[in-house]
Image (cartoon, rainbow over all chains, first blue to last red; front, side, top):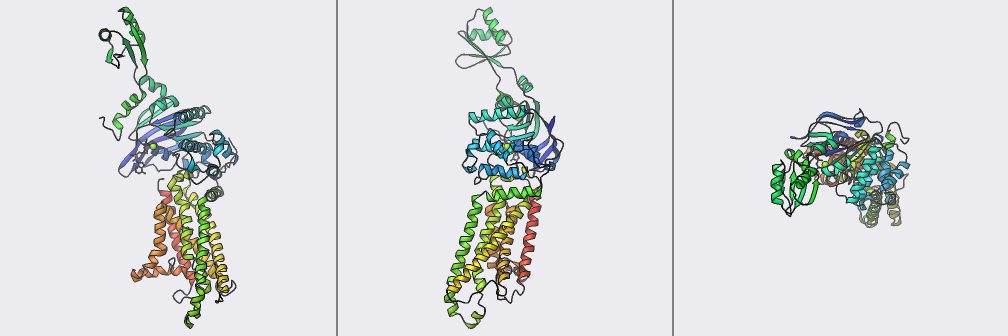
Length: 304
Length: 264
Ligand SMILES: Nc1ncnc2c1ncn2[C@@H]1O[C@H](COP(=O)(O)OP(=O)(O)OP(=O)(O)O)[C@@H](O)[C@H]1O
Ligand SMILES: [Mg+2]
């Protein structure tokens, strides 16, 4: 079921077109990864979804309605845009209480979301003293207050340690399993490949790809095979003769593409060549992502 | 799904704003500071009054206004209560909390109206409390020095004290408007200082047509309400205060317009 419907969205800031005729949908029961390099317009799109920024053209609906027309917004959409968006002088409990009260939610919801995000122990502490990971959890707790069917997270893993990243990833997956629609932005393809069911990739505000994660992985290029042998030069010739492309790897290994591991093994056996290593290598997702977005990176670094 | 209201009502937004205001230590610190500084200035102003009255001429004695003397503390109190009003809005911009607040309450006018109502209610209570406390403290200090002093029942006294509380609440409202328009604490505070101190101080430099405006200006005409001995320049102090309130309403109206229009 379509929960978020972005149609022909354009957003201009002065002369800059930050989001350009963008259309995509976010479905229930899935994690939708929203990817793009810095400045691609991810945060801007999310702000428009939440009615925080007005679109120049186009429209966004949540389950068929504009955000500002939702009768009790927090029960339909929960969002974490910026983990820092908490008054440092306010206790975690009071921060959540003010939000709950604003939507007429029962007070016990505050305790429930604190428990679900593992923050019960610091409920009475001021948010200013929280670590980044704790703030992210507090932001997620706020998003869950109204038990919403749609969740929006802007770079929730930014700045987290591996354990925090793992926790957020599992959390997103469990939210989607509960049937909710989850939209998560990131610049890390590898992170999204492990979390998202569906990918929406944008660059310079334009849609670049809108595909399932498995389809993206399949298309993102066949892998290579790392081969190690005592006579690399001779075997490289035979591999090339069989139609493979061969590159020299580190420590006189060969990086072979165009043949599967099995085919390489058979070729070696046929010629009586001893292999000391034969390792299929996954294509680098970051490479695939950079290939996809290379024309739309706003600030390109120069490789020295 | 948990049970909840089928539609968010204004009272929910009001309640949320009250929770936000009361859960900040800075709110209570500002209020404590308001009373400490406010009453401190009253005792300073009245303690030097004994000597002043002693050496005063007959004309000066005729214009002796013990009520006004105990309420002059408003000059500083208006800034402190203004800070409270400014922070109600700008602290949310400084932290980005305003986005979270607007996600919970996307009707922007409703959110700002709730802030205005809650802060006005607090400012009214606090402003009146401070003015009455300053009056009572000031008069008892004057009485202890055997200087002519006033009682709440004397003509014009209640009007001056209660009018002073209203004046302070109006300044808090002005501060909310400035905070919303400027979105930053420093800018809004500088503007407020400019309005209540700088403009009155530089009044002499203004062209004459602008000076008419000063009849309704804070710390100038609008402050005539603090006096019980009529100032010939301002024969109807409540008109001057009313004029200032109209100006505050205009600033607030502008705040509502920009708050709806701007992206956050
Ligand atoms: N309020 C604003 N005024 C002017 N330009 C803006 C504003 N907000 C964003 N931009 C511009 O819009 C572009 C997209 O910004 P946005 O924050 O949406 O990108 P993003 O995809 O979230 O990037 P990142 O991955 O770095 O968070 C940027 O070039 C940014 O400078
Ligand atoms: Mg962003």
